[in-house]
Length: 237
Length: 234
Image (cartoon, rainbow over all chains, first blue to last red; front, side):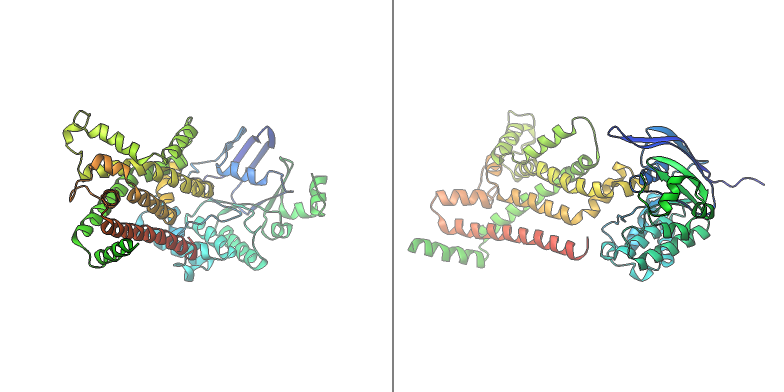
């Protein structure tokens, strides 16, 4: 049986990132396999957002490298903490990345509409995107990322600015995407969210990857004292 | 005072009855400034967009120069074009001097830096907001330019109106390269200058009224565009 054409596993070797003389990430090595969501947790300033951007390719590492198993250029997408929407309608926003990806015009609108259906925004397709509520905007950001059918979806604290109802809607969509086979790589500072969504947990502290553990094990028996302190709700640095 | 009152009344009459001489001057002015705006925007907007997204050594020097050129005195712009188009100049064979064509060129030269500098400012702000998300979608700076131009459309409309306002209000450039020839290269601003110095106040006042109206309309359109953009969530 031939191995499927996939860009996973994603490997990082000796990954480091410095800015202005400050080392934000040091010597991070990890492997992300296809499967259940990988959630990255850690205190603020630990380097979670930087790590995500390095893996997605938005930042160039100062040291080390990021290795995909295939050509990852158009098979990954990212959702940011604050959605950046174009000054156009909801539907136009969902279509835009498809146009960039070179998807033929005939199928673009259908795919975009399907994505909007999935996140429950189909009724708002003609509304100016920037008039949506925060939760709706983030769902739109998810829809347009999902419309690309990426193999890997990065999410950087997608619910940090959302109220609980919107958070729940976003988590539900993320769960559905994970069930459909999209690899989710997400950062969060909300431990409850991590408990709800994680298949495995990566604990980042002070720029270093302290742990990469299956979720159940991480929450019951963290391997490092920092992780244990973090889970207890203490300030860790 | 009575003369002034009489002049004002005559001026109003000229405007309201669309006096042919008045109409001809106004239409020529609009034609010249609109054509200049078209040419200047074809050069200025893409230039502004590229400067907004590109980073290269010497960029800040170019931006400084562009900003300085916004203050290019209209007479100097007129002088430069005159030197180019005069019979002893490099483009003298085109025979454009003292025609509306030369006036269009001079005004286009005048407002291109304004359109480029202001659109650069608008689009750079937009690019800062969009860069990370667009790059995540695989769109580099150059591919982003059409997106920025469309998404910034309301702010860019205001920029275009600013350019048009500058062009339609200037005297020096069109005076030098046009020559203020009656019925051929006489526009509102040069006509006002001439008629006032000749003591022909009614026509000067009438032209002044029309010019002010155009300026007010342009500004009202710019404001309306901003308001519409805000309300439409753009």
